[in-house]
Length: 195
Image 1 (cartoon, rainbow, N blue to C red):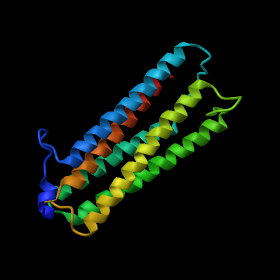
Image 2 (cartoon, rainbow, N blue to C red):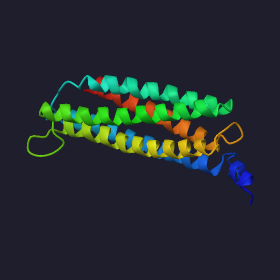
Image 3 (cartoon, one colour):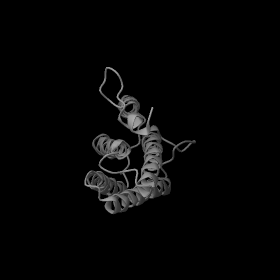
């Protein structure tokens, strides 16, 4: 089977490329994980012994950063459709930097929580704080996988393997990155409304 045949192969019965199908299944399973966590959050909160505390303002800044990164990722995708390879590279690099900035910002939020005596575990911990750490941590893990995916696509773009006739990798990366951004906004709004 030639490379071009592999790139255009579709999964029988779905009309989707196998890589796109795997991505969809990954996003569904990730959504189920976060639905379970947020449901557990509500159930545990209603049982009592729940410490109320203000969420660090840096979470709002991090939310703006991840929104901006969705914009740069979309720019990379649209540039690839127009065969503007230089713009693809610039937009992917910016998205990668913004993703790293988001992770650093989340790490700093953990530091703010510790400074406010909100701990993940131990004798001074409360379930409300533990849930915030878990939600942020599991999302950060997913974002790291997104950064790895971005790095692979960036390397492909440097080898001229991302353009209007080879859109699968950047298309998948764009879908996943938007998913991660939307997932974070859901978590942030959830915490704002239920905290």
